Length: 288
Image 1: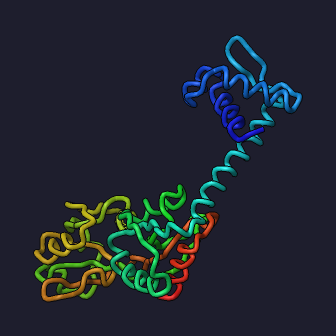
Image 2: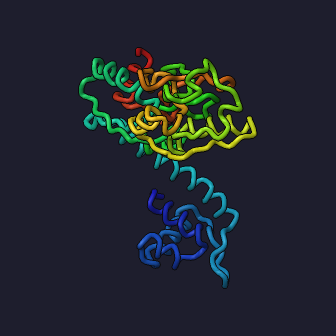
Image 3: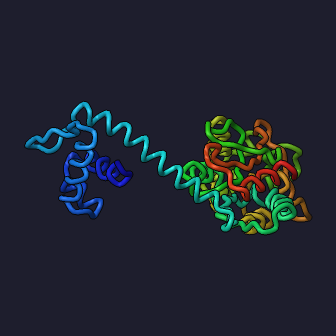
């Protein structure tokens, strides 16, 4: 029994048809038929019953398919793990949100390079919600996210920073005269917002929904410099993490009652093999 025979068998079962399996695998029909015959001969059982409408698994065939699925999944995971064990390729793929990344990435990188100067980082700019998904499908080695709720099972994490969410305003805006804002202040307030795959977008939309309001979002961008300019010129206000923008002669920030604080984390898939450079990144995160 070989892995290629199992893959052939699995694909035949997917369609209950050798012709369609042949088209997907780009393997001749006789080769697929021979693979099934070799398996049946090796184990002394019939795996299929031939019907006029196609192939039908026997009880032995159904059992064999269940076990074959497990073996092929384990083989794929083993291949992934072994590739990540390579010490010659020291590139880490890191998901980085524009906002929370601006608060922690420099410190994380400086700490990592002090410990492991040969490690290279390939940054992929995504929002926190996209980063979670890409961690689970192995697109990313690790990611920085922002959250104010529990993580999904199977995700390892290190807390990097706790931070409040503030409303940033132009000093020319009437709300700049107030220490805090109210529900009435937020209604119809023009906003610049980060993209929809971000924690902040999800958080603010949920906050407004709880107030039975709808945020007045007039522009979305992940460019913090653009948001800063929009706020400074009194074009829009913006919800951002504290310290993302600094207060200045043009911009002030105000607390918003009822907005929960957030946590910035480094995350990775806990079931994956931790390569030496990923371990170094996790250690660096624990030491900033």
